[in-house]
Image (cartoon, rainbow, N blue to C red; front, side):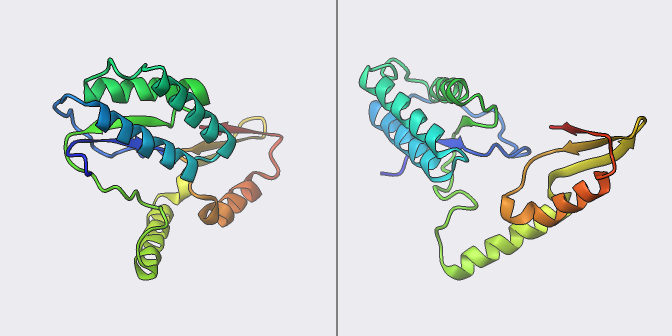
Length: 182
């Protein structure tokens, strides 16, 4: 069953999604269950710490069994509640659940669905995007006192960042200390 409005678990919060304020709508038990299932599946499939993803699953299922989510009928309130739970369990402010009034694709960028040609095109597009945005490296500088400074805007997938981050560290290799501004 396709949910008309859906909640999107943003496992990696991408800045600039441009999600405008969406009109809220009631959410029934079946939709809440489907959202929880999708969130848990996405966490288990893609979260950087698999053990933490399993802990999140266990906690969400326990709360579901206790009926904690039954009182929540607002899509926006449910998204906010899940975000609070995720961030409380993981201490990861990058995680969140966002309500969107329009149907969004169920396949998020970077997931291994699609044909080999589609996946190859997606990887090529991602590589171009990462190069254009300097692999998340916003600024590299040498400060007084031989202190290196790096402003990191985001962390790209490890498969793409190796050369850029190696070059960055080479530039800072003579520094007495390095500040990483995340």
